Length: 294
Image (cartoon, rainbow, N blue to C red; front, side):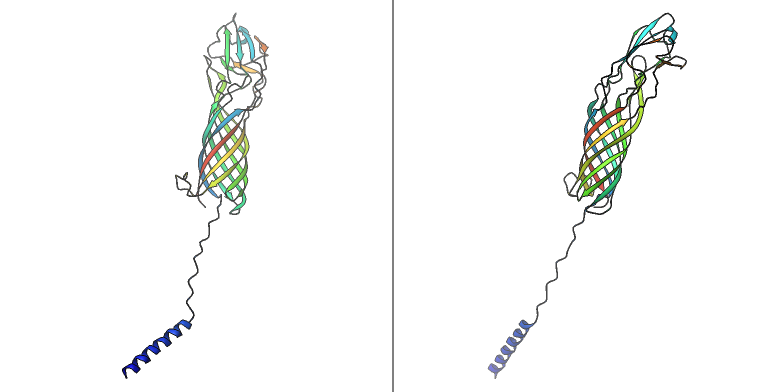
């Protein structure tokens, strides 16, 4: 009897196992899909740059020399003096460096049109010897103001506020840029002895460049920004001086302007009726930290 019960139990177990094997197996859950975020240039950015600047203007004009006597009101009666002004743009190349901030908008993520605005401020280490003044003979009367009649000035800094328009090929952006420019440096007014004060200038800047966005986990991403971008850019900057002095090269102690046609003045050489622009080109590399959308 016991053998019969044991055999029945074994048979029932085998039958249940066989039935379970015939049942459909439960399918494994599908893998979770995590979409890769599409890069966009939209967002605020800030960074710094460094490069090289060089003058693009004509530096071959001869110095301007005028001789004045007491009738000019610049020297004492019965005396005379020679005044010489350099018209050369010497030392118009050197280091340029500074920082920039801006904002981009990209119309479609991935590849597409990008437009934005950028402002920058730059230190300039060239053009310090462009304005030279020499005097021979009698001393000028106290209160006389002397000006370079050709309006040359050096440059200590400049800045721009520009629009940018380009096309992004995913993480590579090619763009053109242009807008307002300003700068200041040693101006065209000479004190005694041979000093000059700053003269603020305005004009425009145009150029273009290429920018590439590194991965978010780049070792350069010190500020945990959404991206770090590297750029190479070229700019042409023209700080327009115009033709505004009309030959004036000095003022009397009373403030009256003196030109080459004034009594007691003789033009020996050079020109005194034009003011040339401060124009130069800049090639620079930059690093930006982008904040906002990925």
